[in-house]
Length: 449
Image (cartoon, rainbow, N blue to C red; front, side, top):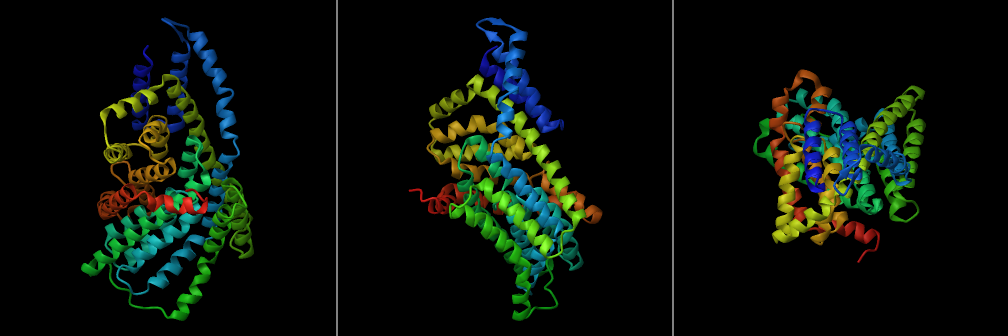
């Protein structure tokens, strides 16, 4: 069979498997193994099933294992562990309370506090799903009790949760860096301005909307003194301290991103124990959650490694890059096409599945267009996070729904997402038209000209 036809057929089968809810790891591994068997067992016009199976098994016995045992990928469970320690130590609650006190009697204060709380927890969790689940249990009931519009209350949590994949540490960014062989440190730091810009536009939109229409968010009856505001900052001390330790060690060149992740996990554990927020039962729960989450991610990584190897054998990425080059698209037009593609995929597929399915094909195209892969890594994560709140398969929305129960309908949550999606498109446009918004900080930190 022609390699290009085989690759196209495998991609269609893979998407169908995703849509019928076959686990991502199983779908990637099955498609990859079958593809490797078919393509490596073909010699000229002859096909040998036994030869193909032997070569596929030989590949699986070496490359996937060496990949998941790489030093760089240790950062994934370490950052997950740090986030779980922070969650069980109630760091989320303290960060939200601090933000609520500081925003005081501003229009939409609780919604603004939710975005700020999501940004703070993002600096520890690395996951948008964890962010949405934690803040959903905490912020949505309080906003509903205060008389907030249900769409605004839930939309701010679902959209704010996406900051977990942009503000470092970010699991998606780490996995992107490993697969594209880019600097994890530069990628993590590049995500920071993108995350701050996203949060700022969310907050500006909330403030303007609630000021124009006060019925969306009744003003708080009680304000807070400067003394209360200053004292509340103790709740954010752990966020600031850990962020300085983790990102500061990378910035100063004292530790790699992987080493910094272990330092961060140990630091959060010490903070939790010292403040008597983590006992042995919560410690055990943190470890168990980390093992479950890490196992799922590494299973997907193994399946993706096999599938990517199959795609490499077909050379479809080279063919696709040549085809795009012959279209004569300008770099900006190319990004517009990719934006539409990723937003459409995000409506139906899991973000990690989208990334691992498209990376081997899209990255050569991005390189041939002259774009920086550090910049594109952040753009891709932004694409994926838009998909996390886009119907019909917005995972953040479903996680939020599960955490708040029947207090708000699924349809109402999706309706409340609209304004936040608009802000995401504005953010994405700014980052594409002005790439330096993303690249200036990592270039400054790593002294890249």
